[in-house]
Image 1 (cartoon, each protein chain N blue to C red):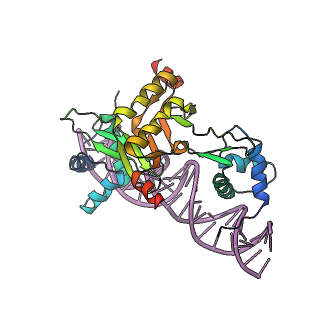
Image 2: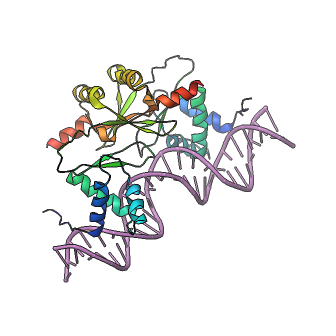
Amino acid sequence: MEKRTYNTKRQNELLDYLKSTKGQHVTAQDAASYLRKNGSSIGVTTVYRQFEKFVDDGILNKFETGEGYAACYEYMDPEEHVHDHDCFHARCEKCGKLIHLDCSVISEIEKHLLEKHKFMLNPNRTVFYGVCKECMAEVRI
Amino acid sequence: MEKRTYNTKRQNELLDYLKSTKGQHVTAQDAASYLRKNGSSIGVTTVYRQFEKFVDDGILNKFETGEGYAACYEYMDPEEHVHDHDCFHARCEKCGKLIHLDCSVISEIEKHLLEKHKFMLNPNRTVFYGVCKECMAEVRI
DNA sequence: TTATGTGCAAAGCGTTTGCACTTTA
DNA sequence: TAAAGTGCAAACGCTTTGCACATAA
């Protein structure tokens, strides 16, 4: 038997916020801060808990973006059945910038890991660390 | 002008320990626990600080092994000039197991990132998350 | 003697958990 | 009213930092 769920004020606040951020990455803290600025007294804990449910429901995508960095969430409109969300991220060790990587070529690694190592990759949690273009240029100066 | 360094008791204890663990991955906590069990009163803080110096000196390799997991260090004997240490790691999300990946095929990604994205990968900090062979099998049961 | 090393306690970070209270249905 | 949701404070786990004390050269 499944657990019953309630439709709550917080849940609606969060859904409204998420819909207004379509196409963007937001953190739990982003959501809490925004809503509190707009009069809500929601806590981050609640955001984490609600976001977890949204992820389970398939309307929110979660990206871990590296150690010490907050996870990012992206709203996926159930109306639009676009689920090209298996993208990779890279994090610059110097400036902290998060870089989105087109997955076409890189996702070959997914295939390799599965076929040769029987390891099923979770792209949303995998982050490539290194130095970005701009920071590499700086070092040369 | 470079900073002068002292040869200390702690440093020697740590070097002895590291030499005894050649070929293995150890954490800062591993080192501290081992030495304390053997009569030393070394603290983890000191281990972290000494390990940082060893890494700078090139006698210790540091691997970040995933969010929430302790970094692993591997001693590199200066006598043996074997530095095939650009290996990747994968972490199973289910059981927490750390898996070493042969880099031959996977390191192609390094080339791709550099050429197409001008991103210089740091393999020692990059961890692939996913589900390992054994845990995948379990799910099927 | 003086720069460097050390150990403890505390802070840091994003996230989770314990718990009493509130809200939903 | 019972089950689920909420917010605060505290805990988590690994690592770093502040600070007074100890040690090396």
